[in-house]
Length: 540
Image 1: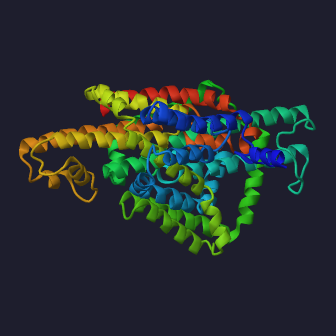
Image 2: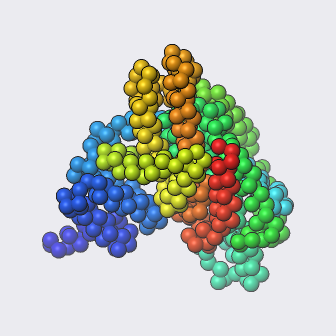
């Protein structure tokens, strides 16, 4: 009985994750307390970071919340940090938590309009290069104001729906039949060739759209969770963030779009695959029938969602409220005017956001360990010992490399918090400010007052010193943001939208594997990373 129960418990532990992964996590949990009492908290803390990055890198084997959460729980239990510190980190970043909960849920109710937009592009535009550019540009624009995961989810839904429609047509199955979208044995050779081309065509568009979410995501305060996290630490409004990041984000956007056009035109890295003409005709007919069925109620919903989308852009641009509150207003408006009034209908909107919100709080637990054990102090000091543009480049590269193998939100959380602490210490060393470095930093990063107001009562020389320190701090914050956003397109580990696409039901249907995604992302990784690096050096 005991042996059977133990076997059941071992099977339940981390569910369907591979046995080697389960054993690795157990080994980590055994190793950490031993290291703490033999090698000390500094070594144990660094090992914990490595273990946690491992759980992020292995996200395809097991979502990082259970395994990474166990590591974080143990770290607090053995005294590497304290629950109060974790709570303080979560409270400090409450605006980011609100963003994830309410903004993602709000955009869920705009899916009809977003799906309508991408469907029109897919079936009404004939040039593959134009479709690719429109998918990339639409992904960029929408992700600058909306949630990148939701935009990706909409693109996936459109592609999956159309592949399902044509596969059923090719295999002779009606919508009432259940069938396997990966099965091709019963199809004629001509249909098989068409479906292979259609899969390649959809793979191309999925990658262009996903890269577009990264291009737009770096530009604005709401584009990615780490953007708001950095902005809240710096006291930047929506407009402030856009302007300060623009010297890097705008050149990278242009380069990204040029890369999209080039790989399609030259058919490089697996791009340039076109949709067979008869498939386009069939899908266009189906889309026209769907539009007829939409009726007046369906059209009214599209208009309402478009109007609320304009309200969202206006509210964010003029900083009418905290981002999460704006997201809540979107939920209220869209549910009220689209007739969504049942609790179970509204509850579905929160399913996408809450797992990552929980994971973000686990990030904060690891960050609490880093703070309490001063783990990044030597690295930050080394990088900050550099001067001028070399320092900015070092920050961009360091954040970029880490974001390729880890989660960019985690990397940004660590770097911005540790860098801010370092600059607080620098402000402490400036005499004549009349306050502590922490008090001065709090005033200078308050979005409700300008630097001039804070520095007005200080001697001119002191005010000049403080201004110089804060200008460099702002540049480093931009380097952190762009470093975590741009080079992270190299792998699915760094970009949540890429990981979401790779783990979706569409990926096996269009034969999109991890390796193939890395290859398809490679031209973007090279051109965008290098242009971001050059822009950091010359324009920041």
